[in-house]
Length: 228
Image (cartoon, rainbow, N blue to C red; front, side, top):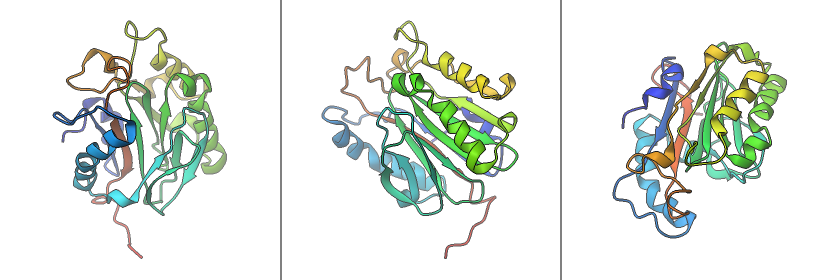
């Protein structure tokens, strides 16, 4: 599975792997969210393993449409980190961050100086709650990150005219307000509601849809680690 071009600003760093798994053709997306995710899991797991990771070691957020952030580390778990929509990991931990989206934005933050990384679920409510700013604040407080060293990428998400609010522009403005240089903020400029062959869209499919999977973790071929 090809890594989308919009992730080039981060994937160009050899120590990192980023991915955005788009719509899986032929998978039934009717029913409740958990049932649909169970059908998608074999495809997502296959891609995770192709990238050199183990499915059981991914760290994913519960995603309650809030604005809370968790700092995670080496111990992997496929169970969600409760109560949060944003995950932060330091540059030496061997953790893989994961976020599901279907119209909401995934936001990757990468500290190019120390390899710290974050992956954020920012939809209407999370964006209104400034979850991106909360994440950058956490990175500054716990990892001593300088926002001037951050690279930010905004995933495909629902946009005008298919949605009344411009979520990616709000996210971009929040990132700028935290001191990240404009030239280091990248927007995919892709609308999930405009291309149902490529993306899932909760809005356009009236809730009967799947989820894309955003991923962010270390490249084990260039950053060897020790299994204890």
